[in-house]
Image (cartoon, rainbow, N blue to C red; front, side, top):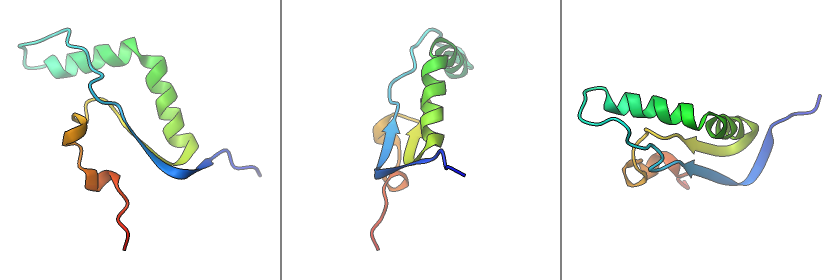
Length: 82
């Protein structure tokens, strides 16, 4: 049986930063509403990125809404040499 999982030679961490547009503001559910609108507008793009994260070993996709890049813990993203 042939494996459909591709192994990347170099680990890749793709952070989708500052992707969410602001359509709704000053409401308690503004972030949730904006996230839903963003995923609706870019459904094909996010489906492709989700596929890439499962099709390639050593690839991590950090989706929108996870925080801006300097707030994502680099210890979470990096591989520590022992």
